[in-house]
Image (tube, rainbow, N blue to C red; front, top):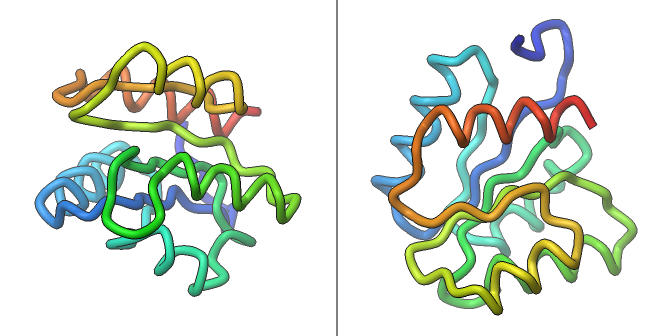
Amino acid sequence: MAIQGNSRFVAIVDDDEAMLDALKGLLKEAGFPARAFASAEEFLDSAEHQHTGCLIADIRMPGMSGLDLQTRLKADNIDIPIIFITAHGDEHLRMQALRSGAVEFLAKPFDDEVLLESVRAALDR
């Protein structure tokens, strides 16, 4: 159920290079085109949001956090389904992200299939 024939891709924003590589490989293997960004600022500066069908973002990153990125996208009227991933999740952060429109909030380590199902659901929105 990939998005072939569509120019939209899954953007991954995480300051952990190993996580970026792992997620990009997982998505590619599942048939989803993906692009990796080392920071929220890099993603915003790229103007790739126009082609992003789904965004996977870490919550805690140096500079702009994942929640800050979500707030910025909403302020700019950019509606991209967001899946948050974090090693530092707590219920308060989870509720804040979901109340602000996140599709999913996954604690690391997460099950690959759960992430892929979340990506499919986000792309089907």
